[in-house]
View (cartoon, rainbow, N blue to C red):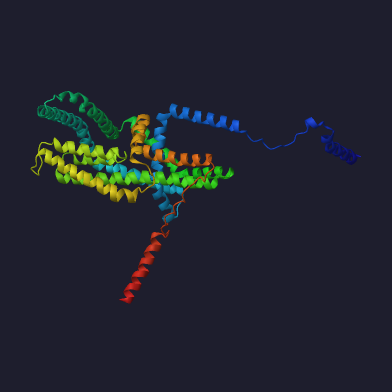
Length: 432
């Protein structure tokens, strides 16, 4: 009897949905697609919110940007350790950051106090030298206009008010003082180990460590998101071009800055220029300001040489400054014609005028960090703008074929390489 009652109950439960009215039956349907207007509204609102967040928290974004740059720069040694030692990415990242910390502490211990002292001297010396130079140039200009007025019989001294060098010099002094103040403040705060500097350094260090560890997952998530919408090929190529721009600029400028800093320090030290180490550090740092930076570094070295009391070459200050100018020009020519094409290449593909405008705009928007990152940001905007423009005109998104990838080096470990070299050496000795 109980079995029959259970069977009837099951039959009623199976038939129950059929008795319900159609309005109460739950039917799974696909989510309807958004209209063009909805997509446009969401895009505009999203961009507005992103701009508002960026503007509101721009001071907090600077440590994050610095941390991301540091993580990007240490990626090659991390990958090298992963290949050579067959270790996980997390362990490789921790080892690289520990080695970087040791190198920084040793460098600060060896050169920190000397470099800091020379930077402070430059910060006090260069503005005074610039003011003296401008006053001297203004007097020479007035005297020249007076002599020309006597020759032509017409008073031209009134033109001097339209050729006022003091205002332009004051702007250059302000920029130079800001640059030196950045370096001097950083050195001072690091030397004094203030709480704010330590906190900022620790924050940047740990944010950079996490970015370096999880950056492959981020890149993969971007690629997967593009794959869902059918744009994986475009996204992969844009990502490769984007990384090529930033790789060439960041690593290239670091290499150029270190190279120029060492070369300028050695060259000016050999010529007997005062504060040669400080001028070398200044020239190396200014390498991160494309086009404008090397000019400021050269002008600083020439000014120091011009107003130096004496020199072991026994030259007149003007001729001594000309010798320093010739050496700085030679260094810049070697850099532009030999180093830059091999280190940076044509990854940015920007006209120097565009770079200069970008540096000025970046400095006005985000200070020294904006000026440093102006060139790759402008190149990235150009990359995505060309893609969007060609897509809107229904043209092929990439007009030029993608450059072939660089051949990868062998992935043999050092042990395998040593064994290979030993075998090759034994073969050569047998033949001999």
